[in-house]
Image 1 (cartoon, rainbow, N blue to C red):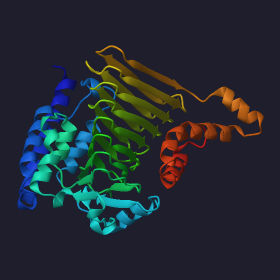
Image 2 (cartoon, rainbow, N blue to C red):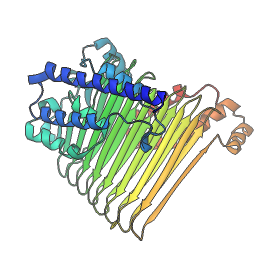
Image 3 (cartoon, rainbow, N blue to C red):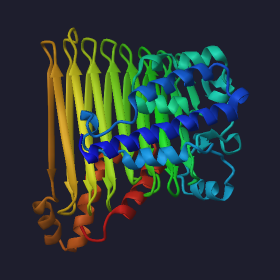
Image 4 (tube, rainbow, N blue to C red):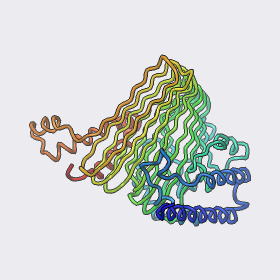
Length: 446
């Protein structure tokens, strides 16, 4: 064993020991305050985490993303229970949010529900929005049932240190036209937020849900989202992450799409020093469909990693993945998209495309589209491109009197807005908000 390997293993063991101490401390301090149904689930989840530990670069799915900084910050921050009493920072964060007409807004600060900052909802209207701290044992156990067999270390860590979360239930045959805007904010205190969101869309129901992560300072977020689309359900889901440039953010989304159901997702990452987003889709019902659109922007020395996996498990299922990355300075991006067509999933139609724009010579992208097909009679394709701005388009604009730098900014903006257009068609105010943030991130000269 080399000295480097020995030092790394020693640090990993020390980190795990520190987190074990934090877990025991949490149990002792919260004890009777924790819901009775949650305690055995947290014990089980922590055993999973102890067994697996944090992912490291030897793992194929993590070879391009170094979690050392995240693990060290976790060991320090998990010692402290989060609070939501820093009202000055909270108000500053929330004041920057877009004003979306008619939205239902649910706010969590450092993983804890804030009823005073949230919209009051009539539960009889076909929507149930229930913080985990208020659900009963049978509902709580049902929410976490699928996690019992999930060996993902980050999901296990989220469950083990969970303080609160939100269960969204849309009743059968209900069509919810107004956006449900779930805001997870971190105010920069040295505590780890473990946001958890569960979404259940009933048969023939429709909904529009926004999951929005914002923060200030050196926040640490480990988020989990679980989504179930029942038969003939339709969900348009937007996940936005524009946390502080000093924050670290890891997210997992697990989505199950039933027969004739339609799931459409727009994922935007334009924040955090380190951002890792795992999106896993199971198309387990015949003619289930998923549209997955993504945009990630990184500047400075920031790092953004998107991992997607779509499992086609039933006949005539369809999926479309279209992700775009914009990288400048010494930023690094990762895109790994995997489509697996399982035996028996005849008639599958799966399309994947990843396009990346590098605005500096030192920016870097690692892209890996993958297809695994175990049946016949399918239509599948994938592609990836990485390059700089189109010089023909630059010439066209300059020939019409547009200054060079303005022309470059116009082309970069147009590249991003093809993804944002999917949001604009549903929530124009949110798209305007993103346009402003993106413009602030673009370098003066590209």
